[in-house]
Length: 311
Image (tube, rainbow, N blue to C red; front, top):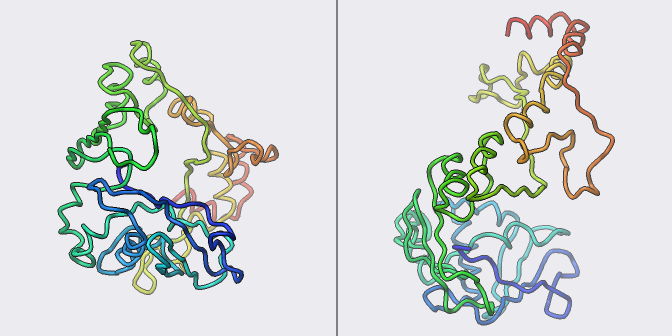
């Protein structure tokens, strides 16, 4: 909302669309879009963002979005993406990156990108233009009179509070009523229920497709190979043994994690793909059992068990 995204029509054969060889896609940009300062948004802005992000000295976090491609200007509102190889899934990350205006940031391409004054005074194409921005604290926006969609947005102003911690954010909505909305609250459900009892707000959950999980480092962080610790060629003294990994899987009490930490905000699952429901496998199972974990280790290679006990 605070920075612009690529305002594009879905390509089709009629407006250029996907090339027959699968290596190009043509985007028709929406006409009439303007930056918050009134400057028209054009293909030059899109091309500039590609140049800006792929300049190594810029050190942009969006540089990876443009890997394996180059962008070409066709006309003022048409951009062609040329992939290095046939690309069946062509609406990739590059079409979702947050864009910055060429007329403001062009003098700061490369190593000077950190010096751009507008880094702290964002200019986008969204429904709200920024009137106050305090990093790590607060951002305030007012209606953008040049917004390209009719009858939007629906609020005169918006104020977003940053910093602090998750319980404070929950308290500001559920207890004090200072703010209207808080998102993705990583707060124990028991505490959320106590806050809800105040009657100022309520928690709404919406099942999503993302998940959190524990990963075991199969490499050894204590051994240096080719100048690197945890090198791909190394093996962790504990986790290299399948029986030890199986035991650890049996020792993760997912139900308790859900009950005492996530509550309504996170349902324990055996699947990596959880939603939409039609893609969720009914055949996968997880189990918490100290007894079975001990049995796995008892039957394991003695060296693996020794590593587990003394590692």
